[in-house]
Amino acid sequence: MSKANPKKLLKPERNHRHKLRNVLTAGDYVVYEPPNAADLRVVRVFVNFGIESGVKMDGKLKRLVNRRNLPTVPGDLVFTDGVSVLGIKPRGKVLARYADEGGIRLIASHLAQVGLVVSASIPVFQEGLLDRYLVFCRITELPLFLVLNKMDEAMHGVVERVLPYQKAGVDIYCVSATTGLGMKMLEKRLMRGNTVLSGLSGVGKSTLVNGLVDQVIPTQEVSTWSGRGRHTTTAAEAYELDDDGKVLLIDSPGIRKFGFIGVKKQQVIRGFYELEEAATGCKYEDCLHETEDGCVVRAAVEAGRVDLRRYEAYRDLLETIEAEK
Image 1 (spheres, rainbow, N blue to C red):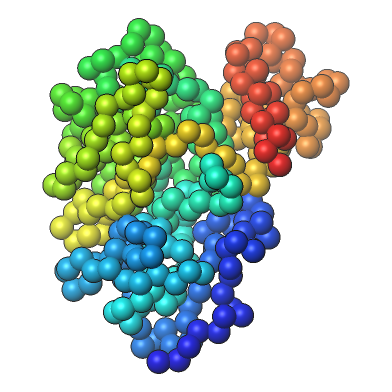
Image 2: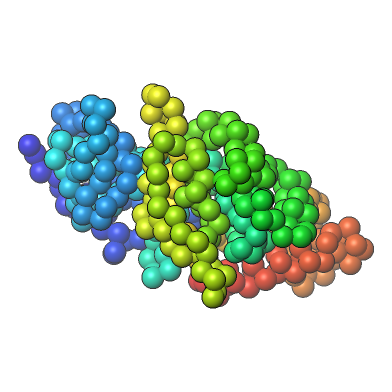
């Protein structure tokens, strides 16, 4: 077996800032085809255990040894000799963010869509988080849909808060993993292609997956003292939704925030459909719609055609983008 040329491998701890200049390059992060690729098998990664990757070979689950400079994520197609991960094929569309501890975190690859799970109860729904996902998914051309879970415990007014996002093309599924409400419609949506479920800790992602697949995932209640979720899923894991294993549902760990990768301030408006619509015909090519004289977006806000709260949310996100640089 020929050895891989280490010069051709991208070391993430040294090259992530150069390689991941923006969200569109995330799918190429540490992709490598070994010189003897034609002699190797290509298998799908279902979970990364750190030093090993869980894959399926010949219909059976198997662990492969990971190489330090070839980190894998669920959805990856990897080259193997049956013992180790020796290479990774191009990842297609991915979900990626800045990790809480610093650096880049790929969450899943070869995605057809992203499902953001939010709670109709506790933890409380945050528009700012949805705005961030919408910006990311619009830039990367990944369809985003919203799962409003815990409808059996719904707080007053929460449905009204999410409905405006339908105008942005975000499909909304009101469900209860506990009672089964809306689960059939959600299952139908998931069959469109590989899906990663993401969201805050405690919104019920693992409970949803338990209702959609045969395997049982441990779950925990939301912390009573903080109102925040406790992390149950510690690593993203893929589950097969069809008999052929061609459609995956990926359960991901709960997050505290969704940090952007190289999103430009001019791209933020992509997550605000009403501002983007109002910006048509703006005379400034790179207008941020903040203090520019004659800006049509600011004029629309002042005239009441654009909700002031949405405009303020856009301005707040611009400020956080600047702070994250």
